[in-house]
Length: 445
Ligand SMILES: Cc1cc2nc3c(=O)[nH]c(=O)nc-3n(C[C@H](O)[C@H](O)[C@H](O)COP(=O)(O)OP(=O)(O)OC[C@H]3O[C@@H](n4cnc5c(N)ncnc54)[C@H](O)[C@@H]3O)c2cc1C
Image (cartoon, rainbow, N blue to C red; front, side, top):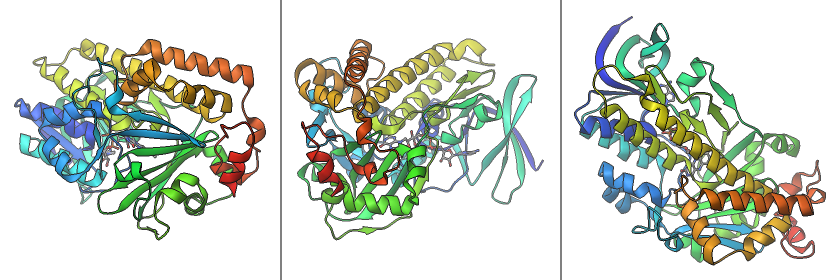
C-alpha cells in the first residue's frame, strides 16, 4: 500500500451530480470530505434534460446563476404520439407542486454541468481527486470502513472514513461488490450521439425536450448550446439484436427516417461525436445502505430515462444523505438510513409505475387515444407535477393512470400486429393514433 489515510467524515466514490451534491453540502458544513473520481473532468456524460424540481437544489448549492447563464432554459417536455402531442408545460402544474414558483429547468451539456458542480465541491472545501478509481472495499467484520483506490500511476492507496457514499453511477460499486445488484426486466438500452444542426421546430428552438414514442421504445431530440443536438433512442436489447443494425447504422437510419429526428433538425447536419451505447439500463440494489455505506443516484438504482428523472434523483438523494450524515456525530448508527431507504424505494416504485404505463401506451393505440383525450384539467396538472420531478407525491394519480392504461390495454390488446417480430423497419414506426394505418405508413416511408 502506498498511503493510508484516515479521519474523513465521508469518502465519496464518484464526482457526478450525486457525489458532488453530497460533497458540497457536507464540506460546506465543515465535514472532512474526500471524493474519488475515476475520470478527469470535463468528460462526456449522457442525461442533459433536467427537471424543475431540481432547481431548488441548484439554489441550495449556489450554482444556479452559472447554470442559468450557460445553458438553455427548458419550459417543458413534449411527447409525440404519432400525429398528436402530449405537452408537459411546467407552468401547468398543480398549485402544490414544489416548483410552482420556478416552472422551468434547463437543457445542459453534462460535461460542463458536472464540472460546475464538482468545482463547487472543491470551493466548499472537499478534497477531490481525479483519475482515482475505487477498486476494493476495506471492511472490519461486516462494516465498510473505507476503500482502496488506484491513482493514475496505478499505485494503490487506502482511505477510511465514517461513511462511504457510493455515487459511482451505473457501476454501482458497493452493491456490485456486495452482490446486492440485480438487473430489472425487460433489458433496454440507449443509443445516442451529438449532431451539429439548426433546430427547425419552434418548440425545439424554445428549449422543449421532445420525445417520440414507437412500439416499445422512443427517440429524443434536444437542443444543446452552440447549434448542437443530443439525439438518441431507447429500445429493448432484444429488438436491437433482431434489427441486424450496428448502433451507428441504427442511429443514422433513425436520423434519416424517424419523423422527429428527420424533421426536427435542418437536413444539413453532421454527427460530431461517436455513437455511444448504454446497455442494461434497468438495475437496482437489494439494499441501498448498510453498515458504513450508503448508495446515492444511479449507484442505488437506475430507471428508464423516459421521464428524465435520473439527475434529479441523483442530486436529491445526494443532498438527503449529506443531511443525514451531518445529523449524527461519531460512528453512524446503522438505522440512520432506514427512512432514506424507504423514501428511495417509494420513488423507485412510483417512477417504475409511470414508466410501465408509458410503455403500455407505446404498444397500444387505444391507450394513446385515451391519454391524448385526457389532456387538460386534473390529468394535465398531475402529469406536469409528476414529470416536473415531484415523484413522491400524486400516488393516487399514478395508480389511476396505470390502472386505466392496463384496463384499456387488456380490453383492446397490444398492437402486436403492428410489431412484426422480424421487421427492423418497425423500429421507428409509432403506433398510429388515427383510425387507419396511415400514420404507420407515413413513418415508414
Ligand atoms: C440513454 C440515457 C439517457 C438519459 N437521459 C437523461 C435525461 O435526459 N435526464 C436525466 O436527468 N437523466 C438522464 N439519464 C440518467 C442520468 O445519466 C443519470 O441518472 C445521472 O447521470 C446519475 O448521476 P450520478 O451522479 O448518480 O452518476 P454519474 O453521473 O454516472 O456519475 C458517476 C461518476 O462515478 C465515477 N465512477 C464510477 N466508478 C468509479 C469508481 N470505481 N471509482 C471512482 N469513480 C467512479 C464515474 O466516472 C462518474 O463520473 C439518462 C441515462 C441514459 C442511459
